[in-house]
Length: 56
Image (cartoon, rainbow, N blue to C red; front, side, top):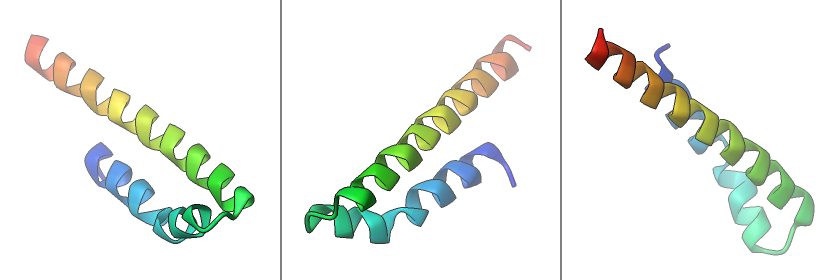
């Protein structure tokens, strides 16, 4: 699995918790924030990968 697929899968995995958090479930909100941090890190990895391939 490449980095982009990993990031997309992470984001999609929190859809149910996102909806629960919107309804007021604090624990689901915590899970969403953790997953979004993982998405952010995956996006940063993709960014680094693109810069390395450009400078190659």
